[in-house]
Structure formats: structure tokens, C-alpha cells
Image (cartoon, rainbow, N blue to C red; front, side, top):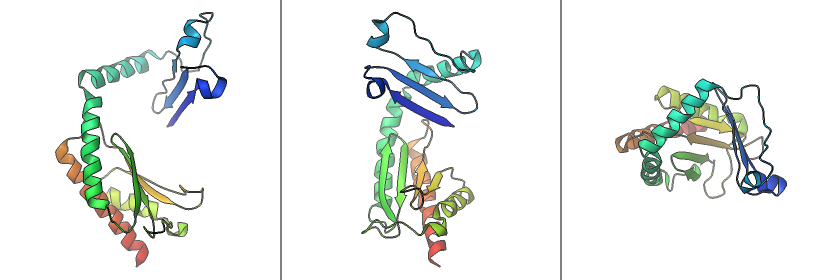
Length: 190
């Protein structure tokens, strides 16, 4: 899966232009233009081998309509605050959580050997792989990664629950996440 956002102003001095590409099972490129294109010649050349895929465009439109009609962005804002509170209650003061970063429901927990110094775990321990194993055993899909500080060391766990997550599911997610992280850390300490 690829994702890229290019800010036209930073790249070329042209304001309000963005090019996005998100590829997964079906890639769907997007070009968003503002004043620079509107007041220009009207010509905008762009092409990809997968341009204009009718099914992908119909699916993207249906997703946008569902997000709008179901007020899912508003739901994400509310659930995001609830999730932030639940994670803070569970992990504030945790000796191996360096910080929690977030936007909406997307959360990243930095795993550290020492909270006070923010020292990372030894990369040969592959803590991130242990976290993933523990998550799968608990039925939680999360995205732990290693080498996140400098390409050699650093571990974190990412969670990205669906927009339709309920308040009741937040507790279940936090319980499973806590259990997997604690079990993975115990496994490297023994």
C-alpha cells in the first residue's frame, strides 16, 4: 500500500495543488487543483496506467457518500477523544510507553526500554515482532514496527480501528493492546 501527498506550494511555489496516490488492492490516483489550475490555460495533463478505472471510482464515491451520510468524520472525532482518554488512563506512567501520538482514531505508541530516558529496546530483541505475535494471539490487528528511530533501533505499535468502532469496543481494544504489549515486554525481560 502506498500513500503520498505532494504539496504543490512546497514543491513548485504553486498554491492549493495536491497530488495524491493511494494504492492497495486497486490504486486510485487523485489530483486536486486550486487557483493555479483554474486561472491557467485549462489544460492539465496527467496519466497513469490505471487511470479512470470505473469500478474503483464508483467504490471511492460510495465510500465518500457513506462517510458523509453516516457522519463518520464526526464519529471519528468523538471516538478519537474517547480512545485518547482510555489509552491515557491505561498507559500514562507505563514504564515502557515513551509517548502516544495520534490523529482521530489513528494512534501510535512508542515502546521504550526506559521511560525516563526514552532509551529504545535493543533492536536484536525484535520487540515489534513479539508485539505482533501477541496481538494476533489476542485477535487484535495492530501494526507494530521496528527500526523507527534511525533505521536500526526503535519500536512502536500502531492501531487504526475502523470508523464504525463503538464506544464499547474501545475498552476491548485497550485491554487487548495492553495485554499484548505487556506480554511482549515480559518475553524480552526474561
